[in-house]
Length: 392
Ligand code: FEO
Image 1 (cartoon, rainbow, N blue to C red):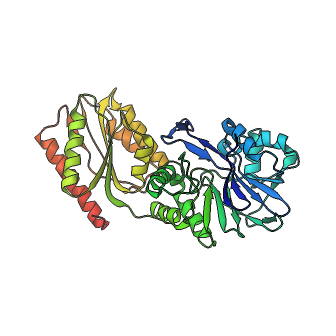
Image 2 (image 1 turned 60 degrees about the vertical axis):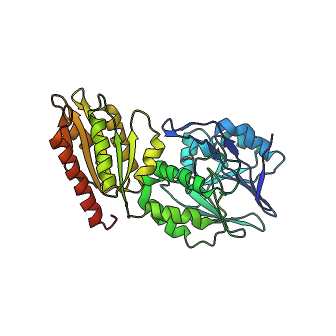
Image 3 (image 1 turned 90 degrees about the vertical axis):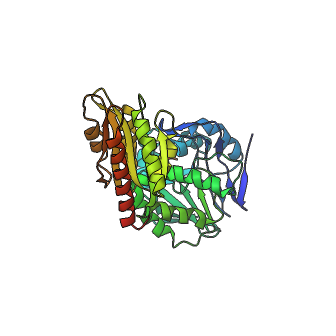
């Protein structure tokens, strides 16, 4: 069954909604599914398809394209959720040329998705004519792969952005009507996919800021009819400014670390600091990533097990290190029975972050009066650091 939705006359959404997918890259939770957006742009002489879909949704894309003549397939990014159907498309449309960056063509060939004679490299700034419409290509490497490009349709003032500015959100809305829901989904998406490339993101935002845009059409999630909504959000998330927040992922085996966590949470609340607390035995990694976008400080809570940090706490540290948030300060709280390398393991797991470490608080066994006083001192120090940044 076909599902085609018009963005503008002659510009159609022809992708697929994946309501049921719950994990991406065997890593990223998709609590609200996702979509693989493809767009058909019809000119007076030529027709272009922008991005394909995940191979699991090939049937949906082919049903939507039925009877269309396709001259160009614009492949903005080689990752398989946008190119997985490419091989099938090239069989069905033997006259179609694949236009992509050189790096994207190379990756597509390595993935076995593109025969040698079907690809054509397009340079940064290059345009192609569809007759009465034009497509302009804007190379945008490292959002989040090295191959990505964006495509601008000046006659309709539409910017197609592939992964950039997208969201993992399955919804019946073609446009981002429910902005609070889309904001949260887009922020999680930014945190997990774009945040490690924050400096590149800022450069690309500055570059596209000069375009006259009425619509931003990403390849995941709803289309934006108010570009400022997502552009302003990205400018905020990718800026250097942090918020008066502490992210506190913790795990506790016999309750000592949980008691310390709860004490520190209350101490921070009393100092008017926002706290995002995550029990690492039952949490959504996307929500933890989202919390890391803005927070000035991270405190990791862990007991000692097998002579080191709890593996769940180490995983949280490794994840934060990979996501490279702009966090400024960090500390560790927890407990031990007879020693171990818990502090050292957590500290060395965070080399990518430009962190100032604050004195950890580690109790021997159950926390005592002196440990609670140390937690108060840690809360005081966090407040002082946030005040130095003028965010508290
Ligand atoms: Fe949506 Fe990088 O693929």
